[in-house]
Structures are given as structure tokens and as C-alpha cells.
Length: 370
Ligand code: SMG
Ligand code: MG
Image 1 (tube, rainbow, N blue to C red):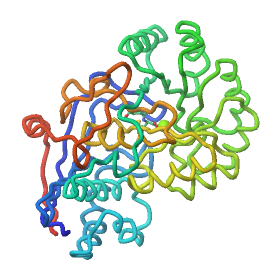
Image 2 (cartoon, rainbow, N blue to C red; image 1 turned 180 degrees about the vertical axis):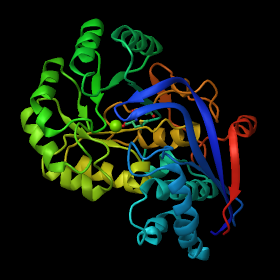
Image 3 (cartoon, protein in one colour; image 1 turned 90 degrees about the horizontal axis):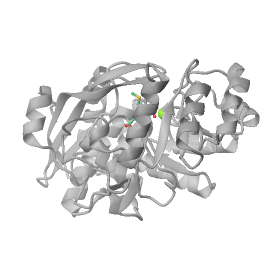
Image 4 (cartoon, helix red, strand yellow; image 1 turned 135 degrees about the horizontal axis):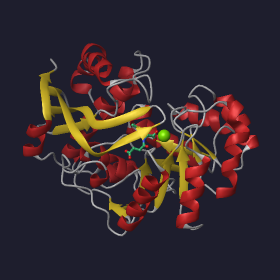
């Protein structure tokens, strides 16, 4: 298999409601899609998970475009006919970092390859379920009343688990109110996106009485030791997101006692093959994992839902329905059925872009020479 055509399409989709985290507020989902065509005549699609600004992690969209065009694409094109998704990681190894740029390229290649093989992502990755429970990530709000309204609405829609974004000044009180209002049976967790330091350990221990499933990434991404120390002070299980960039990182963090749960985001770790390795390492260590999200359109959501159907994904993920973020999705919408999303079964990512929506939201298209 060889790449015969490769294009990058910048798109912008307005969010139905702004999404605020400890590092900023997102109003629109800006991203780019990769579309490639192979010598077998298959089309591969993938969505870049980076954002406009390097706030969640060091990567950002404009940087990802440059590193794809000048560094990553030439390396996979140099493989010629020997190109296959399993060889992409090794070919890109000389380039340090840039996991989200690597992820979008590997995913588009894997999509095309699986379409040629007539196999779905779920089957290829080892999915053991045909539907996955859906969780929802709830942003920081202007008021407690607004937060309670949002949570109530999501629960009415059927979401199986609520994740509250937290930051200093928006943590113990919102958690207390949500717990009191919706009861002890609600599956509830929080995500700080690295907004605290180890000096906040005793403050974070005030979350203990609320029986949270986990606290996600309380400390900076490079503070593995801090997370291990924090885990000795707080009873809430510590979950890592930003800190885990590879299966090796997962093994290290587990061995050091820095995490009891892992949020697996394929984009953050350079692709679905590395994501599956993290799943395997975690499962071998008895550490549960769940699938994170980066406000993906249907193009990015579909393979995430497939990954979330692997056996070690025992906790509901941030795999929400399309209407959590978008009035109109780029693919046929993912719709909650009894609080679950169906795992796509068609070949490759198993969803197709809707051409009319795509042209309406496209900002620009560039062909990358191959
Ligand atoms: O796709 O539902 C989603 C987003 C879930 O909270 C979410 N993602 O740190 O886990 C996380 C954040 C990162 C993106 S914030 C703009
Ligand atoms: Mg997170």
C-alpha cells in the first residue's frame, strides 16, 4: 500500500455551549482533518485532536500541520510500498514528541488499511462489546445553579457518569452540591487539568467524603512523584491523563504508585496502537482504564468508541453523544441509546463525512505533496 493523495482540511464547528476548563474556554471546535487515498483505492480519514493554542498540552494545530508536512508525511512516504499502519510508529520514531500529529497520520493510514481489509476498528483492536456506556465532561460554570441545571439535563439524557472540571475556587463546593442533589449512586469524578500543586494535597483530601470515582490529573504533567505523594494523602483514586504519553509512562506511573486509573486518549499517546499497549499494561497490573475525549467530531469519536469497547475499559469514558458539543456533526450523529453509544461495525472507523456539512464548515484545504 502507498499513499497517492493526502490533503489537510481545516474545519470549524461552533460548540452548542462554551466549554471551560482550568486552562481556558473553548467556543468553537477548530481542527483539521486528514484525508488520504491509497494505491488500493481506499480513503482514510482522521481528525487532529490538538487545539488552536498549546494549553492542554504542548501541541497546537498550526504546529501539528507544519510537523506533518515537513517531518512526518515525508517519513511515511519514504516507506513507499512497504507502508502499513503497524510500521508508522517506527518510521516516525526519529521525530521527538508531537504525538497528536503522529496520531492523526497513523489513524488515517489505519482507516484506509482496514477499509481495504474490510475490517472495523473495533474488530482490529479487540473490542469485546457492541456498545459502551457514555460519560459526560461538564465544564466550569459561572454559578452553582447553572452547574446543577447542566448535570440534571445530562442525567435526563441518560449519561452514566458525570465528570466535573475543577480548579482552585471551583472544587469542593460544586462537588458537594452535585453529590447532595443527585445522590450517592451517581458515578461522579473530577478533572483538574493540572491546576494544583502538591501543596494543595490537604485541600484536595476534602474531596474524599464525596466518594468520587477518581481525581484526574490534579498536578502538572511532569510531576509523577507528586502524584505518588498525593495518592498517599488523598483517598480518592488518582487518575492520570496529561502525564501518560506512552505505555512506558503508564508502567512507570503504576510502578511508582502515581496512578490507580488511567485516562487513555489515543491522540495524546501517538495513536491507537500505543493506546492499546497502554490498555494491555494497565490490564496486566489490574489498573482500570477509560477512554478520554478531545471534543472530537464523529470522525474522531468513532474510533474512540471502538477503543472503549476493549475489555480493560471498565469505566465509562468521555465518549459523549454528538449533541453534547455540536448541533450538526460531521458524520451521522452518535446518539445515546439507554446511556450507551453503539460501537461502529463498518470497515475502518466505520463512519463517513457528510459532504454538505464538510463543505459548510471547511475553512481551507491544502494538498500535502506525496
Ligand atoms: O471530548 O468530551 C470530550 C472532552 C472531555 O474533558 C474532556 N477533555 O482533560 O480530559 C480532558 C479534556 C481535554 C480537552 S479540554 C478542551
Ligand atoms: Mg483530562
